[in-house]
Length: 194
Image (cartoon, rainbow, N blue to C red; front, side, top):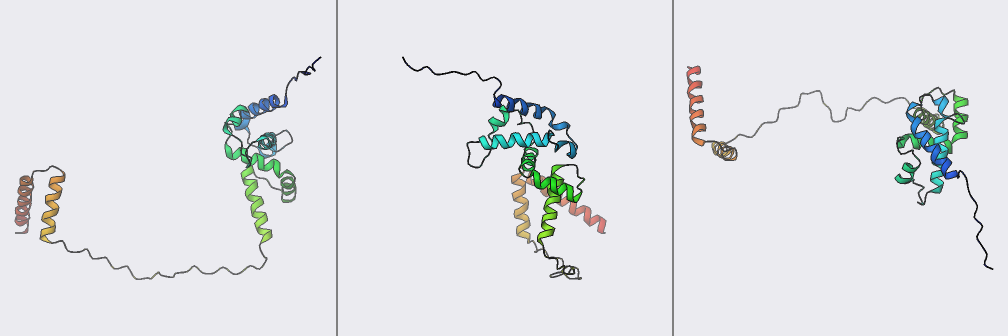
């Protein structure tokens, strides 16, 4: 007698639970404003970061990038990519972040501000304590003299005529009318000068 495969029914797989979690997160992500609330154990950023961590681990790409189709399937495609990235960063560095918040008394309102504060604190501790006096701004290449006006090259009679002819042709203007207008302008200027 051939061996028969034993089929077991799985009710409520973890993938289904993750999809349900993702869709719930997608529907509430714009309503979260308080950093204190979002980084609690069941807070938005904590939940989102844990889901992102699972999806990153399941990713078939070496970089761990999560496909657009997966994001859509899990219902978190509508959450801003920066917010997803911040939530993943939070979950991956949770112990250091919580310690930083405790020691520094951070009162910011977003993960972006928290990241900036942590970078600033890390940068400040890495730099040597020897502070040098601030130097005066450099004025190299600057002078108090007013710049000389650049002289325009003189336009010759021939260049002017060629320019008028080219513009008349380019704009389909009647050359005789232009000549009449020029003569009228000259006679007007002569009358005013006299």
